[in-house]
Image 1 (spheres, rainbow, N blue to C red):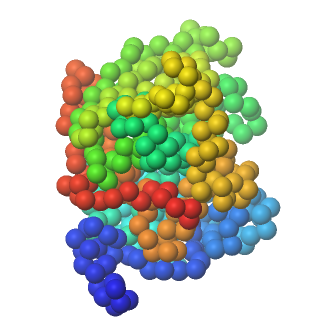
Image 2: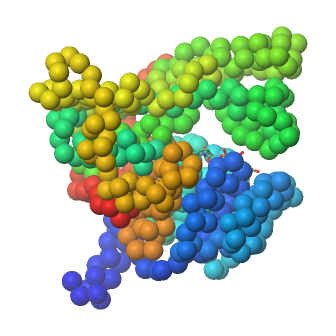
Image 3: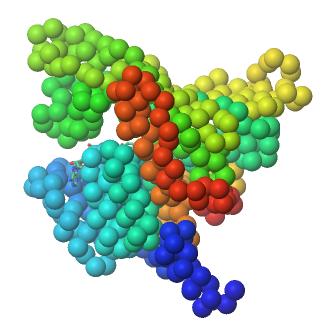
Length: 450
Ligand SMILES: NC(=O)c1ccc[n+]([C@@H]2O[C@H](COP(=O)([O-])OP(=O)(O)OC[C@H]3O[C@@H](n4cnc5c(N)ncnc54)[C@H](O)[C@@H]3O)[C@@H](O)[C@H]2O)c1
C-alpha cells in the first residue's frame, strides 16, 4: 500500500475502533509519571536507562516520594523533571496532564486512581502506560475502554509477568504445539502481603515494624489494606491471568465466556494482628473486620473450551509463587516444581526438569535483551514491559498488551466480587471486544522487537 492509502485505511479502521487512529511515529518520547511510590521509583530504572526517553514531569501527593524519585533521577545523571503535588493535593496530576509537551504518562498510583487518570490522559491525547489494574468497578472498565476507542490514544497495561523469562519460553512452547491443544491453566497472586498491609509506613522503620496501618506513613498500607476490609474477590488478577490469556489467545481467536468465584473465611489478617509483637487483642486493629477471604478461587471458562483457575492468597504465611500450570492434550508445565512432562518425550508419569525446555525455547526477546534487562525489577521482566510500551509507541504500532486485555483481565475483580456476593453465581463474561475477538490475530511477543 502507498503511504497515503495506508494512512487513510488506518484512519478508517481507527474510527471503527479496530486500530488506534493515533499512529504517529517518533524517535524519542517525552514521558511523565504520576505516582512515584515504591513501584514508580522502581520503574524509573528502566525509563532512565533509555536514551529515547525524556522524563519531563513527575507527580505525587507526598513530598517524600517526589524527593526520593528526584534522588534516583539525579543519580542516573538525568535532567530534573518538573514536580507536581508534594503537598497532599490529590488532584495535582490534572495540572501535569494539562502540559502540551507530553507523549506518554506512566500511571503508578493506587488502584482507585487508575481509571480517572487514564481517562483524562487519553482525552488529552497522552499515551497511557497503566500499572495493574485498569479500574475498580465494571463500569470503570467500560469507561476506560470507550475512552480509548473514541480518542484512539494508545493504552497499555504494564503487566510485567507476561515478560518473565520462563513465562515467555512457555509461550514459545505453546505456540510450537508442545503441549498439544490447550485444556486448562492455573495461576494466582499468592503473596504474603501481611507485612505490607501492616507496615506503619515510616521510612525509618523496616517492614513489619508496626501494625498501625493506614493512618500515616508512605506505603501501600495507606490504600491497599482498605481493599481487604471492604471487598471480597480476586483483587489482583493480572499477574496470573495475563500470561494464561496470552497462551490461550484471548481476544485473538478466543475469549472468556464465564466466571465464578469462591472465597474462604477471613482469618489471616486478624490472626496476624493478634500474634504480632506490637499487636495483640487490645490493639485497635484487632477490632477491624476484614471482608477479603484468605483464599479466593476464581474459575473462568473460555470460548474454545479451556478452563482457567486463579487464586488470590495474600493474607496467610507462605512463600511467593504464581503457581502456573499449563496443560494440554500432550503435556503439562508447572512452575512451582519447575517441572514439565510431554508425552512421548518425557519418561512416562515422570516430571522432567523444565530448565532444559526453558533453554531450548528461550524467547528471542530474552536472547536479545537479557543484558539490558539485568538489574531491572522482578528479575528483569520490568525492563521488558517498559521497553514494549516505548517501542510500540515510537513505531506507532498497536500496544502488545492492549485495551481489551487490560479491561478483561482487570474486570475479573469486580466480576469475582459480584459472583461471591450473589452466592457464588456463575456469570457471563462481558465481551469487551464486541465480537472482534473472532478476527483479531495474536501480536504479543511475536518477534524479537518487543
Ligand atoms: N507490576 C508490578 O509488579 C507491581 C508491583 C508493585 C506495585 N504495582 C502497582 O503499582 C501501583 C502503585 O503501587 P506502589 O507499590 O508503588 O504503592 P505506593 O503506595 O508505594 O505508591 C503509590 C504512590 O502514589 C501516590 N499517590 C496516591 N494518590 C495519588 C494521586 N491522586 N496523585 C498522585 N500520586 C498519588 C502515593 O503518594 C504513593 O507515593 C499499584 O497499582 C500497584 O498495584 C505493580
